[in-house]
Image (cartoon, rainbow over all chains, first blue to last red):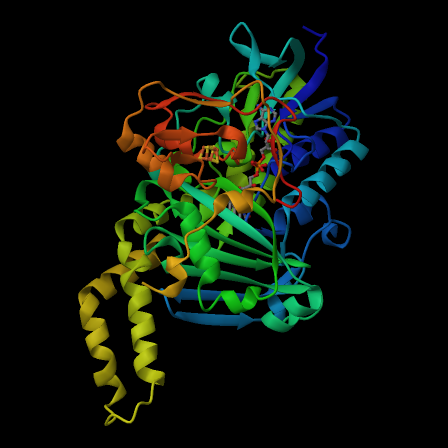
Length: 428
Length: 99
Ligand SMILES: Cc1cc2nc3c(=O)[nH]c(=O)nc-3n(C[C@H](O)[C@H](O)[C@H](O)COP(=O)(O)OP(=O)(O)OC[C@H]3O[C@@H](n4cnc5c(N)ncnc54)[C@H](O)[C@@H]3O)c2cc1C
Ligand code: SF4
């Protein structure tokens, strides 16, 4: 079969898809990327902070040209209860050193820019078309079906995100389970750049990333996040689907932005978008089959995301998996073998990169979180109670600090503290 | 309960800020005829768009127009009370200007 219309068809214009299209087109392959939204990025939402390392390798110096928001030089982590927040604030110029820097991003402009990069490398991008099915020839994927149209290719890369209906349709994965998935909801609040810089103590073009454990997810598995953009703030909540309580997800979001420690940061801001998206959280154990005959799965669709609480990573994995897939397709082109055997190098490259090693390293972490509900309830309460006792001076006779602290520790139990600490350390 | 918590959320007002191209001819999510209320209540909690509602008579009231296409309802109830969950046809549905 030498008459396929394209060498590679990529389904999905997110980060993974646009990067794969860019790399393949750059190597001279005939590439078609199909996106169901009206432009790459139009359906996509993230927290978001992009750890730059993997994209930097592919497009050195990209941050100077791309529509990134702010370079993150300030990290904050909080334990939050309904009326209090106990936090850690870490500022360091080292966070911004090239190669280890990270940026807040908004996906609609960012993915469009990546799409333009792919197009100028020679890729064809068609937006506004939803791929409904894949073409099979003798058990091997050989193109896509959309409406009346069938378009053929030697290989199809599924970069169609967490819901990847196509991977399911062709039996590469089962439905993900509620304990492996979290729902993310985000509000985007518009504020002038100078106000953001004042409120978060940031220089021009620099910004903060803040993560919150405790009340944002109603003391259940999940958390809150806040990222400063150029002229807006991304504020959101993530909640694991198997651990939702009575409070609705929109109400979690509402209560989070009304929290007395958050509301002043948003004073005078205007809501300009409200979004929702799933987050794959099951780690290595939820990864589906990612190599098939004539087909590869990359990015979220492959379950490539890690939520450590103090950091969420998915976009750097999306970039790196796209790179591995592109390299494997280029190898397969040499031998003209696009069967699963011919595409096996995808796994080899993933093993050699940070992607599979990191997914494996953090393999136990989702289980640790599931098995340690205290992180989301008892510990934030303990931290806030301890700090309250430390800082409140009310004219009562003072007690030694140790005496003040012990009751809070005993509430949880010293043994539980040691056990959770040990388990936690082992899982990351 | 803190004062913050008493403010009940108005999700519709937030959704109205978003850009949607609603496909009037084709519902991309369809509920089964007989809905198990225990399943439905999960979606009332989990849907970030809050579009799984009850009407004044306590009956199921669902309109796909404000859907954010996240897939949460599919994960929770795809096998039980949903007759159909697909992406909207190309070009239709939510369009993020920022994302
Ligand atoms: C609330 C939240 C916070 C997060 N925070 C962070 C963070 O701070 N840092 C980080 O690194 N990661 C974060 N992540 C994870 C990160 O956003 C994802 O891992 C990443 O976006 C995955 O990119 P992708 O290209 O694989 O998928 P997506 O961006 O979902 O792209 C998939 C694309 O495929 C298209 N598509 C799907 N099906 C079809 C079809 N049949 N036909 C045509 N097109 C189709 C979609 O429209 C979409 O454009 C977060 C995620 C969420 C939800
Ligand atoms: S896909 Fe998401 S936003 Fe749409 S109805 Fe289902 S849960 Fe709600």
